[in-house]
Image (cartoon, rainbow, N blue to C red):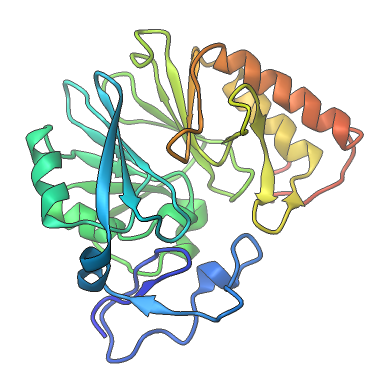
Length: 279
């Protein structure tokens, strides 16, 4: 079966005669295997029933997501920059129309992904645009399709180009990463957080979980560390993982307030699961 894709999480596996016996991403407690069991598709089959849609959030920030919803349902963000465009997070479907549209917007210099749930078909995207993929080395074990385009970084910060910077803040995954874009939000700065910092439905607060679908909380120490990691950053807007998961104004204050709310709710104690990075 050519490059099987898990229909539950959207991650792609290498070419093989048969689909995988299981999806390790879905069998982990942070995701789930559907009650109907594991099933598989391919890029060609996916393209016949789905298409990608686009939304311009800012002059230089465009959302890309799949309709109807597929897998986890996240949308990616194409951040346009004078020194090269960055794709933040990744979606599974990459069809001819998407390649043509993204190339017209300046292509992709590199891809950076917040955590393994959004690795999806990152290798396909990298090959289509001649891009490198930046992943935190702490999550290397979750790569299902190894490739020379993948670049693993270490430590807590990685400068890309210009003023773009990746920060490993942990939480949901040990290598959980956010992107700081100081030029975004009309120069007020934006934090692209995936669901490492999850924008809540009220769009005025955020949430922190070890497993969102299975309702498993993070330890207080992990959430406190997340708050400390972004405290020094200048940002007014937060872009989460889904189409409308954005905080338009006062995003930094919203994150800080949400950290305190979380710590108060669990009694500021050890309740929850540590991500293994307690300091």
